Length: 125
Length: 125
DNA sequence: ACATGTCTACGAAAATATTCGTAACAAAAT
DNA sequence: ATTTTGTTACGAATATTTTCGTAGACATGT
Image 1 (tube, rainbow over the protein chains, first blue to last red):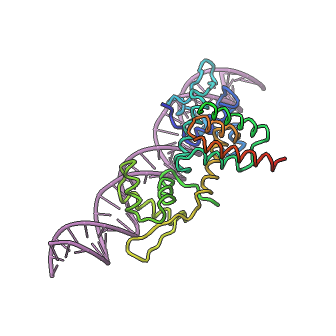
Image 2: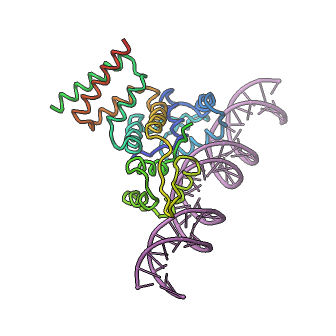
Image 3: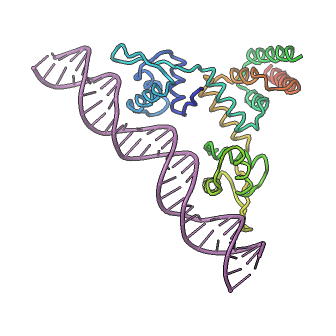
């Protein structure tokens, strides 16, 4: 059961995934770069997330250290499927084409994707 | 400025994109298959969407006929980018690999994607 | 010791999204 | 004519998410 994080929760998870275990202040510092965010707002969110089991925290020192309790890949899975279903009429390949079409993938990445496809085609026989 | 539709709004848009211009009843019929949904709930949502400019409606007959006022592809764009940024650390190719990895694409689709990639590689030179 | 700064806890306000009841009216059926 | 059915409008109740103020605890510097 992967809790579907809210938007703000996802923002926080993003930081934790990227930076590793962090304090509220550290997370808030980063979030503040993007958008004015009160310290206690971030704190409260992270407390809620802890309660929901989305993150765990080490309370051994006074400043608690939080880390994600759900894997990035699981959330990716969930959100990806939701998006495919919600906006791409269930067609994953539509989504893929659209994503590639935006030209954000480098040559090396394209090459890698091609390899994956060939591998998949092989399996599928 | 693409209004970012809420989840429920997206459900409704999905129907309108798929079925074309529809009445509230028609939309509600479809939504009800998925999930218990009161008629006036759907009505209200569609009224709000009309007000926001997400849909337009033909009021010439008593039963109004609604149609989308934003293109599916634009919403796909917006949501895709948001997802890449929020859950895939900004890496579109990560998302693509993940999407393909789920094995939901048919052989023909894979082939099509491969063609696209080759075309992109050509352009990029 | 005391002031100052930093931290957690937590209730509650504010903002946003969703659901629904009821009224008014028009159309259709009896 | 009267009743039944289907429709919009719309306020308001709920639910959910986000933001913030305030209190209390602890640590640090003076």
